[in-house]
Amino acid sequence: MPLLIFLTHPEVVIDPQVPITQWPLNAVGRERMERFADLLAGRNVTALYASTERKATDGAAILGERFGLPYGTDEDLGENDRSATGYIAPPEFWEVVGQFFANPHESIRGWERAIDAQARIVGAVKRVAQNDRTSGDIVIVSHGGVGALLTAHLQRVAIGQESRPSHPGGGCFLVLDRESLAIRQDWRAIEDGLGL
Image: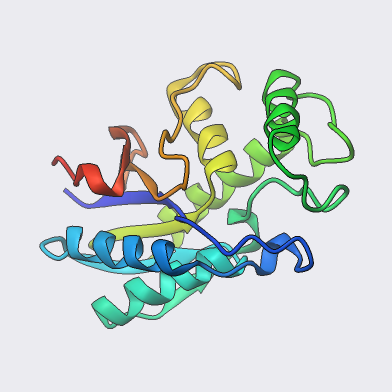
């Protein structure tokens, strides 16, 4: 049965002087993406998609090279829009993220509202699943925040009550049935293996 695998990009080069959307994967992130490609070696991966953010396209390019596939991009697969603040250093960043999930109908510090980001990511994933003309597995390389919002929708729970990616560096994946988008496997880190 074909799958849709939603992957959050792994570790990035954090540079407050560079727009967040242009941060590349760092050496650890690239190595973890290579590991993810190894993990998928026995699967029939026929399509790759990514958000337009560099960290996601870096990951999709690694998978594309391994599987001999091009990848498509879609802005709607991007992380919640945080351009109003730009980079916020931890621990303050995590406090703002907590407010984002706790108040989904409000714009926190000018960020895109969680409810809007959720509608966008759900629409993008559905569009990819419906419009892709290949017959095998689809892999989407995206982001942790919108991945959590997608999960809330799929689990039919309120934003903030969903299961979430747990690895602090990202590089977690959710496995869905390609046709129904039902969750086949909840979040796992790359290191945990596919498990199917």
